[in-house]
Length: 277
Image (cartoon, rainbow, N blue to C red; front, side):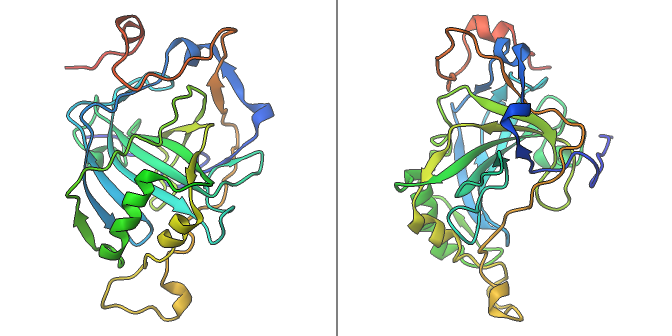
């Protein structure tokens, strides 16, 4: 039986990342993070009552390297936003909030057979986060917006006729922060390795406004007051870092290359933990 993790302790997320306190780590530089978008298939989108969420299927584990000691497999993709266009990210950087934050949730495919099994277990999850910055419309998020009328209320689900390119907002830059934390929604399990990219992606004001029209209640259930209905803000406040360390890859003097979006080269792959049979 998998060992469960604490729900509330000293490893809660999100956090405020103070850049002057971040530790450059040569191990992260020498073990490049690999996010493989080959064979990703988005199957459906639903309203969880807290956010929209896209279910993702993939034939093989697609996340490895960097701070991870195992192979992880993406399972779902969702977003966070606020009441205003500058208060929507869960993580902060030197106190700054962005317009929103995208999360790709992965489970440990070496140790667990499914997301459900991994969700409450040690080394169970890894979340890739990308900040949303107000600007031009995001093509992927526009596809989400187009689905919102069909998932307006909690519990509604729509099968996607055309797969979404859920990997498109992942930055090509290899610059990121990482730390050990928790889920940012109940039950707050402290088994998440966070990978927070420094480079944001764009989202338009109209797209953010569309997210806020989602309802937190089921279609035939009415809230006590109108302010309880729309999901106008689904952001958790920053949690104390306590004694945790936020790390980033130590930069090479000539390191300006992008992160590989396909399978790693044989040289890179030899440096990474191999999948267990």
